[in-house]
Amino acid sequence: MLEYRNLVKKFGERTILKGINLKINQGEIVFILGTSGTGKSVLLKNTVGLLKPDAGEIWIDGEEVAGFSEFEFLKIRKKCGMVFQHPALFDSLTIYENIAFGLRKHFSLSESEISSRVNRALKLVNIHDINDKRPAEISYGMQKRVSLARTVALEPKVLLFDEPTTGLDPVTTNAINELIKDLSRTLKTTSLVVSHDMPCALSIADRIVVFDQGQIVDQGTPQELLNSKVKLVQEFLAEAKEMLDHDSNVIRGTTS
Amino acid sequence: MTTIYRDVYSFLELVKKTVMSLFLKPLRVKETFQQLYFVANGSLWIIVFCVCFAAVVTILESSFHMKLVIQNDSMVPGFASLLILRELGAVVTALLLTSRVGAGIAAEVGSMKVTEQIDALRMLGIDPIQFLLIPRLIATTLGCMILCVVANLICIFAAMIISDQVLGYTPSMFLTAMNRFVQFRDLIFSVVKAMFFGMTIPMISCFFGFRCKSGADGVGSATTQSVVFASISIIFLDFILSYTFSYFY
Ligand SMILES: Nc1ncnc2c1ncn2[C@@H]1O[C@H](COP(=O)(O)OP(=O)(O)OP(=O)(O)O)[C@@H](O)[C@H]1O
Ligand SMILES: [Mg+2]
Image 1 (cartoon, chains in turn purple, orange):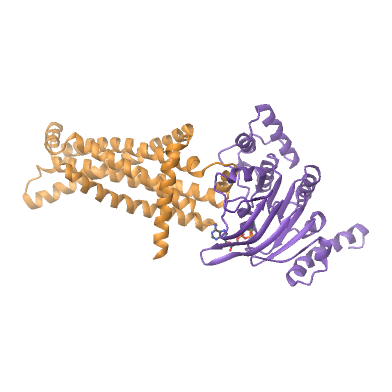
Image 2 (cartoon, chains in turn purple, orange):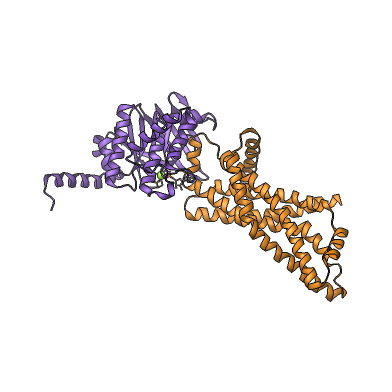
């Protein structure tokens, strides 16, 4: 469904992505973990043509897209939705219009269909009654959820999430992780999720990929990663393991 | 050195894309009018205020020096109106628009870039040049031309009043002198200058906005750079245009 072959991206003298090889199957949920500044966002942006790679290939649905023009990328961008790291809502539009905007651009729907799809998307992320507010009038966490709804409303086949739950409360975080899982089970959506949320990666990911300095240092199912020998992976896991242990202790009632 | 070439090249690239989408893609009419309202109506009083003082200073200073050197300031009204129409009106308007409108555009576009709104637009198949730049380009160009005419008239009017009150040249003497020194085409040339200045400001602001680096200081330096480069370009363009127009006299 989605495959990177030897993907290289440079900014000036700095090489950010140093040859990424990764294959993601349809319906799979793949989590990307990695420290700040290792090029996770850059990888996602290359996928949909917001940045152009310097070398390597990107295959989406049997098409090599790295050499596509901005115009050709339009159909790829209908197929692959992206939820940005920033909420990236359009300041001048209301919440409703922010979501309806993309629907109007990509599909020809009647107003009532648009309205029902907007409301359905907002319900998925647990947001009500703010249709007429502007992005500046709602909290950051709400903005992030609206931005997620905006992309999900377009019902793309591939979803790229750039830290969808960073900065959100645990309840909303869980709801969003459930949403990602649901989309992949019901609509067979392929998801590539950049996240720092290790416990949730362990619980919903089919596969976890660990990034460091623009390279993949380890990948595998959550179970395989738990036994990884790579130091960075162990560091990432240490905290998550602690939390998991803590959680089960709380449930068993052994934590004071 | 190579980075300067690359920057100039990417600026020219932006100009090329802008010209292409200006002619090939539909215009966002409503947005353009909103921007025009912001540019013209919003800047009117600042410009009126500034050109009035520019006129006063021009008249008083030149009178003072003429009296010192040739013991007579009868040439002041004529020279002042020449100076106002040929240089002051257009340049002062453009420089004020650079700091008010140009800085605003750079900050707005820059923060849209930093918060990934521009990427979000592209994801929907929207061309940021058509969506953001073109309406601002048309609005600022028209706004600058309109404001330039207004500024010229107000400035001349202020000069006339101050000559009457302080130097003792009645309005009819002022107008007679002016009629001898300037022609209608001076106003036309002034508006042509304003058109070029009005195109320069949003082009440069959007150029720096689109390549804004992330972080709050990114937006800050995009704004600063856009104002600096737009101001320099206006002064430089003014020289080129004045030089070119001098062949028509
Ligand atoms: N448009 C750009 N121009 C120049 N450098 C860039 C650009 N975008 C990203 N970079 C650089 O590429 C590197 C990787 O950035 P990226 O945003 O992919 O990091 P990340 O892995 O997503 O980190 P984070 O977890 O903080 O979001 C950074 O050092 C950044 O400075
Ligand atoms: Mg990132």
